[in-house]
Image (cartoon, rainbow, N blue to C red; front, side, top):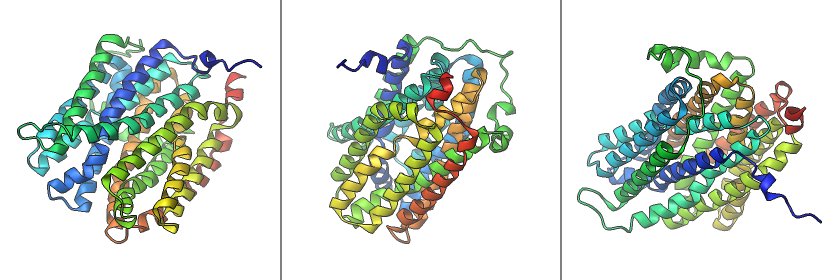
Length: 412
């Protein structure tokens, strides 16, 4: 029996692995602050609803900033826009670390959002350097780097809080400093080692209102095929972010666990998501239509949401979170893949940026909805988002006739 050809399994351009490394470092920088953002907000005396506005401020700013950066990357090139985005994250986290008043913390999150188009620009780099046949695998591994960041980030956040504090910086603020340092490392790697991947520079650059794509973003939902994918991204994001915010008080209060246990849950989901994206996404995409995989994984995600309040015990929750961690890793990288496969090469940055903006818009709305629901009942958000996620899965399944995106069709 022949041994598996691991070289073929990971047969992607060398530049892909560099952008994957940069994405991993960026993901670690982002996920370091996720476990501490809620308690950091409480340190400023913010209520639960006000704490949810921190997430909304970031996501809403990213919603407006990402299409601009995507369009600029099509015109000016990916490399320096990516560097600009990473430097923005570094500066924002430095401000958050030294913030003494709540408004500066909000400003820092908004700045990070406005310059936070690094994921969409990195996705455009992947589209530049891979073939259509390679993209399901490439986007799966790329998405897995974010999951791996969820493993490493919370651990680094814990250790960062053990560091000696600096003047004007609290123990929680030290995690923001570490996050800023990691973002700076990603910026340096991009600047010195990542070559430019696009030669498309249409016309002389001139910033105008069209670059902000407000009108185009509003009309994008009506675009043939792509419009439905943008809507799917939005609906998937809203339902998921309702869960993400409600997950923490449910775990801490209903299940009576502590912050260390919460960090372990983040790490567990990250590990399972990383493994499933790297080793399961490619075989599944070879065998099934990508829309089928998206729909089924979202349906199973909805079932997981419903099971959590149905069996509100720690043991049951761990089993459910294992199931959730495996199936949750597929929707977004596959939606990105389908979007990319149905977009012209010269529009990759712009279209992927618009898709990311729909996700950012959903990330702005979901936490506020969840914050309002949590103020009424800690289990209500899970019941509601579970039912809504099943409906979104049905919407995804109805898109199947429009897209033939399994590898057998791509290769034909």
